[in-house]
Length: 288
Image (cartoon, rainbow, N blue to C red; front, side):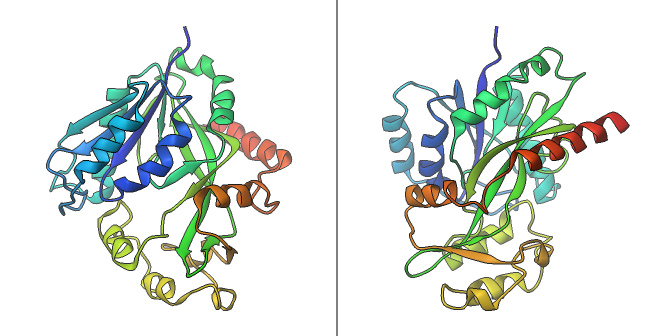
């Protein structure tokens, strides 16, 4: 019997973005878990609110009764924000059930082809038989949406690897378990930084990377726009030169942006790149 496709989200201050993300994975998922802190606290201990209209949207959207609300105490004052994140991810995965494919997606991540990702995932169902003895991580790639402008949105021109699925959720940092990695060529949009200034300031203070932010990031983010973005460089919030340049989508519509990404040769993973990336991961795993 095939393991289930279990998808989990950590729900916090950016819960409204789930209205973009959940529809992209709904059809192929067996169950979708929304982990929400009982006290509505972030990993930094600050309070957030979730409007009742969001739960009304869930009730109306969830026509197949796939969505499960999982509430628990996810904030621990003695832990760092990253330690709180890892703890919540492990608790969520236990709820999702070992023996299944455990896929954790952030609220601001939108799949372009979740059906294709599941087809890729099913090639490795043998890893579900003894997950503790054969842990594995399945990865994709992110196109980062950087900042909304008057007429469109700036994005990071280089793709970033992201680990989304695992058979054994022994998380160490974020969604990373330190197990063998297998990458697919699937891409997600990531609204990591494309918020209002106040929303982004709150996120930078309360997410798992809050102590890693470089001093120049936020001021540069506030200054850059669709007219001057080519005059700036080095945009990453931790090691700035990791994201060297930005591009521009002439629309704010997420569905239209998905089409731009799908047809952009720069934002594409070649078969040759994927082969060598996975060969390197396999060799690295054997070397252990």
